[in-house]
Image (cartoon, rainbow, N blue to C red; front, side, top):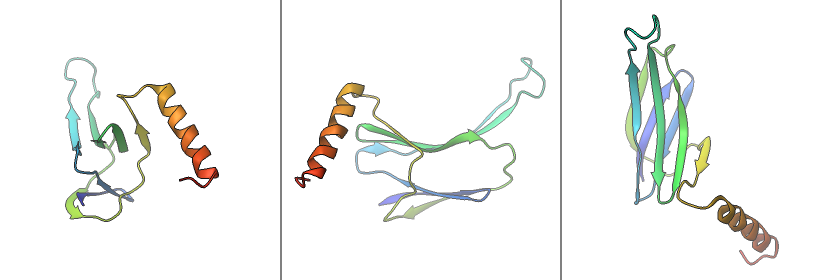
Length: 110
């Protein structure tokens, strides 16, 4: 699988998704001139959509970061996302799915 290896501070994040998705790594700078003095911000976001789920590995300010390395790599395993959500699905349906999955695993069906 192809993905990104992002290194900054003491972090190494490897992110990749399946065939039906998108994986952006975004570095942004916001200059709020005229709104407030010293209200500039640098932001890093590593997140993606994989099928019907939204994955997030990192999202936050990076003002103390001096060096960020982003490489395109072939990966077999990704870093564990810090957040996984299912924006297109009903919350109750997702809870029911995981409850049934656990029940079937306990019974040895799955």
